[in-house]
Image 1 (cartoon, rainbow, N blue to C red):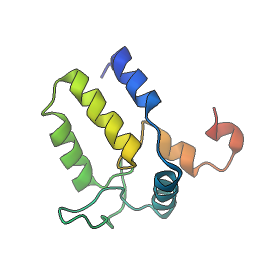
Image 2 (tube, one colour):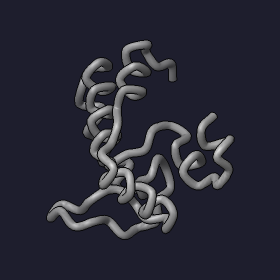
Image 3 (tube, rainbow, N blue to C red):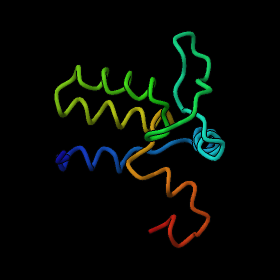
Image 4 (tube, one colour):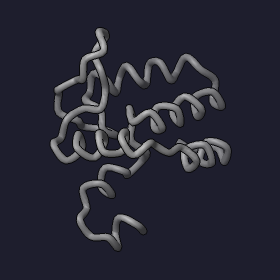
Length: 104
């Protein structure tokens, strides 16, 4: 899948508050999903892709596919900013203890 330049810019611009970042790091270190259930409770399933369990990942893909390509990028960027999704390869950066590899 080829990503558009605008998509890459949007993803790079997405940032989280320090509180959201702490929650993301804690959930990643414990292997828990970043998603939530319909009633707003945190999903306690094991994360498999981009910080989400299989069920939450499929729901995210389904919601994302309802938009055109530019809106998909904006949607994904909003999820990353909210701490509900990890950027591509962000899991390995969060789990890696080496400061040199995390910042590369």
